[in-house]
Length: 274
Ligand code: 1HE
Image (cartoon, rainbow, N blue to C red; front, side, top):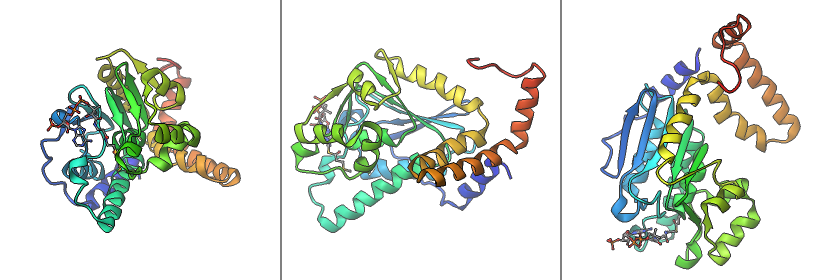
């Protein structure tokens, strides 16, 4: 069974998505889906409708999509949780809301497709938690990163306390939360919050180029990178090594791997860096 068929059967089991709200756009660029947060007037604050739509998109991405680029309209990636929706919530509703965010971001991080996020302006609070669930992050010059939960009397609730320490270390996250420290794009990239740094306006172009490269990989390798690599990295080393061997054996036994290796050995394959 190919990874495409695995993906199809899982997607077929999922409920059909309802129409997307105006706050989320999906466009097709060949086999790349461009998913755009489209609430610039509210600095792409994440309200429930947008979160539910993001979750629905990732549980059943379009069949043609091999990679997702996560972008944002306006000058800011996301100002985080929509604070306007928070004020009326009691503790139980807050618990369920946080778990809904967890489920949504898990669908991104541990879903079917590689996700490349284009970061600019505010990448704060829940916006940073959303960015942390992506696999590749491109930061434009204007991007700034913060966890203003302390200022608002809140705590992270979208998986930030799990994902951000893995990216930047507990000590840096602690500093950001306690002191309200704002990292600029260079500081964030140096800390590990973005793998790529580009001038303002260049993020989407680079993300599309990267997505096109990712889409040229064997889908089964991409699947292994998303599904196996993070689990191996968190497993005890002996368990991780066994998982690695199992995953490697499955991937290299695929017909696509055999075809690609034969093409290289016959002088027809791409070389490193092509
Ligand atoms: C919002 C939000 C929001 C803007 N919820 N409405 N996040 C924060 O604490 C960040 C709060 N936002 C800001 O600090 C600033 O808005 C920005 C630095 C991001 C941008 O500043 P600016 O001057 O460009 O915009 P603005 O004038 O502050 O905001 C424009 C509009 O967006 C305004 O609404 P309007 O109706 O008066 O035009 C703002 O109210 C609205 N807006 N941010 C709701 N966040 C799962 S737990 C996660 C916990 C968190 O994410 S805590 C962090 C929350």
